[in-house]
Structure formats: structure tokens, C-alpha cells
Amino acid sequence: MSADLSLIWAFIIAFAVFLYVVLDGFDLGIGIIFPTLKDKAQRDKAMNSVAPVWDGNETWLVLGAGGLFAAFPLAYAVILPAVYPPITAMLLGLVLRGVAFEGRWRDPGHEKFWDFAFTAGSLVAALCQGITLGALLQGIEVEGRNYAGGWLDWLSPYSILTGVGTTVGYALLGSTWLIMKTDGPIQERAYWLSWRLFPATLILLGLVSLATPFLDAEYWRHWFDFPNIIFTAQVPLLTLIITVLLFRGLKKRQEYAPFLLTLALFLMGMIGLGISMFPYIVPESITIWDAATDPSSQLFMLVGTVIIAPVILGYTGWAYWVFRGKVSDAGYH
Image (cartoon, rainbow, N blue to C red; front, top):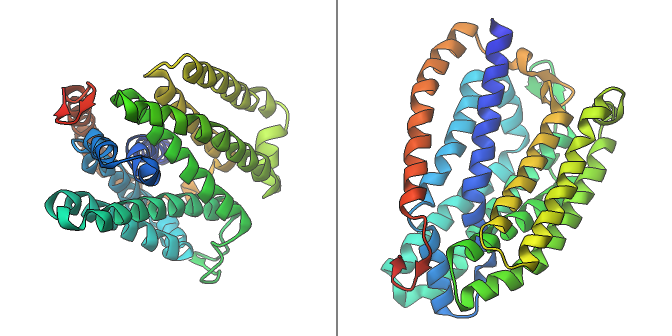
């Protein structure tokens, strides 16, 4: 029973993290591409497109982090000290992004400052999220039940690569979101940006995918040992299909497909992450069962999550349904 609960909680946390990437990724992407928008009218419309939903998107980050702390406290106690600097910078970036979002409307006399803060906060948050992922994948030094590494072990060429890849991927999410939610000159600008961010995202995704199996022999076995390769080969195949469809969607100037297909690329990345790491929550050191709390605690929390998660999904879906149309200069149609 305890093994089943640990697997369930691992899935819940992975699901929450993916939903956070899906929902907060595009509004971080809006901030990243913000300086490339040509004038105030375009920047206003970009911010209006995410205004009704941006703050609710971070609910899933809270669920993911809270679930890790509650269901896998040992992993939380090891991972957090290893990545305190990028996690702290990420949280400060999210705070700065949120303050800038509100300050831009309430203090128009300093709009340029708030625009800079919005971009800076979004860029720092996105970069640090990717760096944290890279730091986890490259391995964390553990002795006994404690983190045994140094203050800067998280910083490496690989973690920088994953940080830049995440940032560029979020920017592509932001530009394809604007394709879907706007029209006129800003939509033209979003198409122009997407055509440049699309190949950059593919290149960086490819580099991360090629580098990851060489980080650890266990990763290599997960991907290439028989019969694993029969199943793992489907991930790059599906990624290739998604890439072709995304190219086609941009070429045919489709409005919804580019955003949905970019989300699919992120899903493939998440599946690849799961293939590389499972069953470890701290690679090569701590499995999900080693890190799990008492089964009675997991069951108690699961009851609450089963009640609360559908409520969160419900009001999130309702918010996106209400604001499903195009955004204009005056707001949503």
C-alpha cells in the first residue's frame, strides 16, 4: 500500500509541476519577449491577455512544492539546500514580476521602470527554474540523509544549458499565446517572434536531450537498454511529429495549433525527465520510496488533495473559459 501511495504522490507532484509549466510558462514568456513588442499599445495588449489568469497559475507551483515537502520530506531536505541560490532568485523574480504587473497600471508615471522589472522578473524566474532542473538532473551529492555538496554545485555548463533552454521555450510559449489571443499588428509580431524562437527551442531541446544520457550511466540504461528502447524511442518520434506539425501550423498561420503544439513539446520534455529519473527523486541517491513519509500521512494528505485538486482544476478551467476570446485594446471581447 505504501509503495502505491508513493507512486501516486510522485504522479501528483509531476502533474502539478507540469501544469505550472503549462500555465505559468506562457505568462513568463510574455515577460521575456516584452521588450521586443514594438510600442505601448502592443505591450498593453500583451499584458491584458494574461491579466485575468496569471496569478492563479502559480497555484500549481505551491501544490508541487508543498506536496514534495509533505509526501517526500527527505527529498525536500536534500534538494532545497543544493539549490537554495537559484530557488531564492526564482522566488524573488516571481515577486518582482507580480509587483511590476500591478505597478504598471497603478503607477503609469514610471511605466518604463515597471516594464523593465516585469521583464527582469520573468527572465530571472524562467532561467532559475531551468537551472534548478539541470542541477537536479546532473546529480546532488548526498551522504547519509544529508546534502553534502557545496554552495555552488548547482552551477555547471549543463545547468546553464537547461536554464537557457527553459527560458527560450517559455518565450516560444509566450509568442504562440499571443498568436492565439490577439490579432492585428501584435499578432504579426508574435508570428515573427515564433519563427525565430521555434528553431532556437528545438536546438536547445536537442542539446539537452543529447547531453542528459551522458550525465549518468543509469540514464543511458533507462533510454537505450533493451527492451526499454522500444518504448523510449517513441518520445523522440513523437517529438519529431510535433515539430513537423508546429512548423506546418506556423507556416499556415494557424492560431491555436502553435500554442497547443508548443505545450506538447513541453510534455515530451516532462516525459523524458521521468524516463531519465524514475524511480529516483534525487538521482542515484534517493528513490521515491526512500524519501516517502509515513503511509498514514500520505493517505491523510491524499484525501484532502482528491477534494481540493478538482476544485482548483474547476475554477482554473472556468477562468480560461470565461476569457476564451481575443483580447482587444479595451480588454477581452
